Length: 208
Image (cartoon, rainbow, N blue to C red; front, top):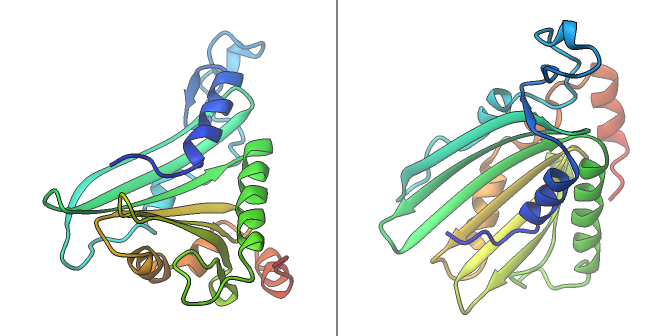
């Protein structure tokens, strides 16, 4: 399935600017502090195994096809991501990706998603590309649809940190990506690794 997202382009920019990926937050041998090469460093992203628990286990009418996950550093940028896809032969496919990033890349992703959602605020609720503002799930996002290829995508910023991208092929409109996204425990994801104080503050003051 062709990647219908802006996420890959931003990740590639981070990779080009960075160095080789290290394993799960461990320092790269050869760094200035080489004596501590095998000592776990402070890693700002959730581990991909934690993110994986929020992927759907199954989708009605579809078979689980592929999945993957990774956690690592690319220079100054840290990224954790998981992905799972479901298919119905060659006719239909749904893919769910969850990403957690650090530093400037994470901020850029959040700004891009919020800006795209804000641009579509005036669209009618029955418009397939109407943006998503789910305050009860602490999620905001934009939706795209290409009728010529039947490709749809919902890209959400969850808890002002995590990016959830749901894409589909072979479905009319964006009903399926919205349904799959809403069935994910987005509120639970938003609270992942937050302190009680952070959870209270974020729920009271959503910037959208």
